[in-house]
Length: 183
View (cartoon, rainbow, N blue to C red):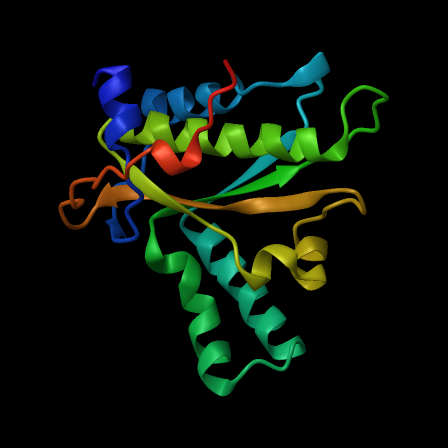
């Protein structure tokens, strides 16, 4: 797939099925993440790859979070099924490192770039996914279950797999309202 075509036509796909990326394809996805912009080469990220029983474990953590946060019975029932929406979920974590020239916001942005790179690498190789956050990305119980340090932050959950349906074409918005020129 041509790079510009990929960039201009990428679209998240929430309907995913097996198989998930594996082998060299998965390693390409990992390597794409490691090429994200990274001021001072801090590598301010780590990733937890959940598949198989790992998805069940993540679902159990979500369920416990829903219970402890007094969610509705419907939300509690749904929580353990959330990771099952794809054959693989990669938890992206910003591992903040104090640095005089690289503020926290820049390290979070670097992690976000790594997630986008993984999503693009997956799509370039015939897979797709969707980047999700929500309450579980900000829950202290989930943070503890994933062994996060106090300064760490969940950037999101990257669901990856094979598209279960055709991804609708991208409708390109007018770029004019988003860009201003200083000339």
